[in-house]
Length: 440
Image (cartoon, rainbow, N blue to C red; front, side, top):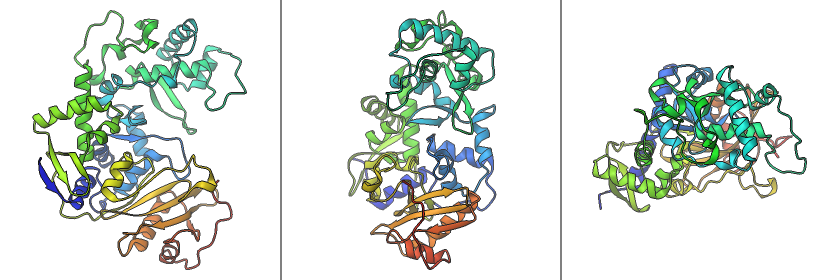
């Protein structure tokens, strides 16, 4: 067994790895600073929920404070791209150098065309690729119109009722043949060929020659270009697992095999084998953390900060809270997203953000941006049992910072939760009041 760490030390290692260990920089946030945070995180999850702000914007605010969101957009929509969209933990922005490694491990047939008749699937595949090879990026709806595709849609089907074009182009995205050139204001992907998005250094024969793909490319078999040999960027699955496990180790600082495998949704056995190789190479080391349990690994290059002095409201999709068991072991914080829970059964609220203060998950806050009225609605503020003194004041300051960044002029706090009154008082509003239109 390796070195023994206290739970507090483990917390600080994890926070440092995620860029949450200290106070935010006071200088204006530059694109370079955004890039440094992305390099730490390795990926940022994307989600369509826009109750507060699109979720991928929040991790950078949590770590850097107010910044220009258009600067982040440019990192994923203009060449040379620092971030590209692909399946990772879920739909995520990833580093271009991880694209090929992830492509080898993705198995998400549910998003695409596997249930379509082969002749329909193959015909649409060829036509979609031909259109995208000679046009600007297009949404699935625009592709449907450009192809003149018409089909009878079922009205009795619950969930996603995608047409065949959307299903095929989504599967092409999963296969890595097409990519997203960016998102529309309504959050639709704008599809284009991967060769037009991925920086040249990371292209492979499979991404360079999509129009030579045999129709069997959608069958679920590994993707290779017809007639193309292995290129310099081609990997086997073991090499890919090693690359992604190393990245997950860096992003965590400390964790279990299951923590690292969950980050990029790799199989546990593949992650375990890769981690063993990292231990042999001296990049990872076994450690013991009192109160956590056995089989823990630490990034060998990660130091142990003496203290944690940051504060942050964390997105429900923040990478620090991905792995719920790790979150509970490290911080004693049991957390679930209740968006899909019926309103009467929610415990804390609809869109609840954990509040990190120092090295403690000190509170949870149910938030909504009322853009029409220019108000940040605080539906509930629940303090944790071990919340440090001063939590309400620090949280109030964080809420003001968030409201200013979102260009919301006022903050209204509902009388719900143990910290509601102290936070409202710290904001200069001693009288909390219930909201007229709570989120359903």
